[in-house]
Length: 104
Length: 167
Ligand code: SF4
Image 1: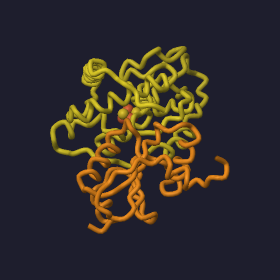
Image 2 (image 1 turned 120 degrees about the horizontal axis):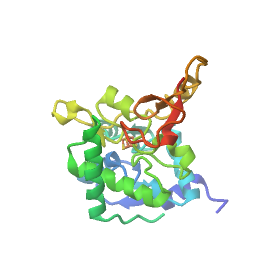
Image 3 (image 1 turned 90 degrees about the horizontal axis):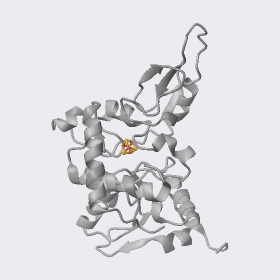
């Protein structure tokens, strides 16, 4: 376990949703949060391939790994946080910003 | 951590209670009832997990002491209602939203921006002439002059631990 990088731990926690390839889309969400749910529904309706994780449902060390990852993009570590192509981060439920970031 | 099961009736019951309490004290729940009920389900889920109503839209630490400012209603609700016409989750909204003059959305996270400031500003000034200390509800700002804060804030129903010494 110790030899695994943070990135690998991340991959292992993620749920993958199949769909059209619009680049790499990762959603960090909470299972109890209304805006996270809206963001997830938006991605579902878009039909895009994406990965998501409910950070609140993770075990403590995985949770910490996910929090560290979110913090890299969004220091306040708020949810939802969407990371697109390991490049752009959209904080909060924001359809326009997500569309812009994936170029549609 | 597994996903919790919360009974539909419990969600409905709490919805009705919170709605009654809100309306009785000048607050409003989000009129988008389905959205609101999901947040209330989140509150009940967090009660099962942590033993308290951690904000459904924030990651709780699981330690009540650390999360006290985000126990619903959180310390940030009223400030956000004033500035954005809704709380962070949009469980509570302003009259404008109820009247349909404003829509809800994601708003910036206030936690961590004002917390330090609020703490710094809360050091009580010594006014030795007062016969009673003045207590301030950190949730809604209600002030009362008495030996100890009330068990429950008569305005917003926050518990005693949410009060700070104001003067
Ligand atoms: S009042 Fe605060 S704790 Fe409660 S739902 Fe709204 S943002 Fe979350």
